[in-house]
Length: 220
DNA sequence: ACCCAGGTGGCCC
DNA sequence: GGGCCACATGGG
Image 1 (cartoon, chains in turn brown, cyan, purple):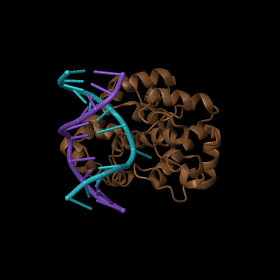
Image 2 (tube, rainbow, N blue to C red):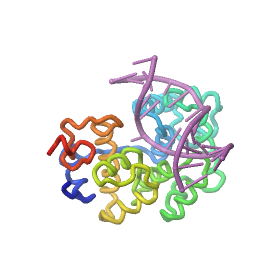
Image 3 (tube, rainbow, N blue to C red):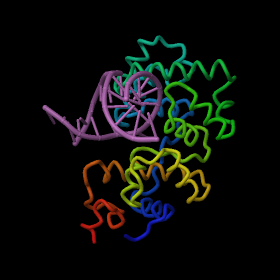
């Protein structure tokens, strides 16, 4: 197997998929709402939920805090786990309004401190916390997800069940401290994963096929 | 009729 | 520290 360090992996994916502008031009409220709604859901379904909220002029944490729970649940229903997610959104909205004068005040804290705080909140796990830090707060925090684990295990032979933070540290330590790179690299992992790295082999035409231990033999 | 999706938390041993 | 499980909808 040829070696493929993370920066070169990014270059390769970027060359293939182009710059992927995730959550472009959205408000921080919308990014956080989307980060919660997308937990174990397809983005297509999240878009429906977001569109329902927008239609009701409720794509806003303060308004979500004041909405009737049943109404919120109905709006976000397409994104799945809608009762849990409604509670998570309510809890987030309540937390911000009772502890800060604005969402921006919370998001302007240091990344490490903000991470601890987000992780202490109910329904906010590591991936959601890091997505909020990276895309809403705009601070370098690498977002790991199931695709990131699967792809790195197939290319580098690492444990597919690697600890979230271990992989996060490994990638962070080997790429430059550049916000746009952090944002886009995660998006590239997801793009590659969706197209070519499902649990079943989809090696055909995969941009990193020759580096992949899963299908590398076919590529050689 | 399955299997999967841009996870999280709880409970068990 | 790992292995299950519930949570729920919509698309392939």
